[in-house]
Length: 414
Image (cartoon, rainbow, N blue to C red; front, side, top):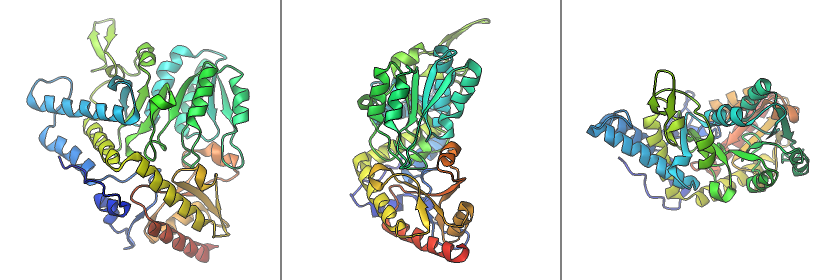
């Protein structure tokens, strides 16, 4: 397998590791990729790790005793151990592979929620949640008559912590919230929110899909009960995500899906569940994708998450500074010191979809729409926004190209 190149400390050299970033778009313009909040690009070493599995060790895992099966199983489980270490889990048993963060949150709602929540029980969410952390609880609320309470979002784009205290006085059973908003970029005080929730007797679930790719996240330090993230936003492949769960809680939860690999024994009329984490991994897993995610973790670890964080903050600060100079552009959310690498904005008199389409002609890839956060957009009385999001392979020059292209949009349509 190709090892990821050693990081030299120069982020400008990282772009060479991502083959997609060197292409041109249909207009002939060079690609400027500013949509990493939707999905990040993948470095060569991640792509080759997956390719090597398919070319040399393609076999199913946990079942065969031949050479290929043993190689595939070893690669899969070694990736689990590295991912567990990356997030600070006490054991690889606490790392459950899912398809994405959405499935991980659904797993908690269907398994932990259906066992532990009853009519009248309260689940606390926030107004800035992605649909993935809204809809599963809405489904459960309709089914079980549980009550949903929401931490309000202030005009600045921060969680209203005073209102949170009032909600905690209602003695909720679960507090589930995003670590970093995919629209506002707001980095929420996760450790404080979790500590206060636990003092009120609640279990906690942290949606780390946006945060974990950008700065160090340690589940032990945060004292989180559950945490969910997706591989494809952190240089890994699509189709694989992770649910971290405290071992004692996972042991007490019923299986999410039934079938192969999640069983220890099956009778005609009953079954015995497998041990952790396999109890929650029914059927053939995303083997190549897990191996790719393991390589992505190695890649990010080689850079150092503190370095990733520092670079992201510097690029975001520069972007906020130059975008603020455009009087007809309006940014949602807090200042650069309170946000990650996401900037969502509106342009006077121009629909976000038109913005994105013209930017694409200049090679600038951004996201336009409600970003799977419709209630949050309603909170700010806008139907949609244009979103630029930054990652390790972005530079000041990428931001400059964005700004010049936005000037062109305004001149054409404003």
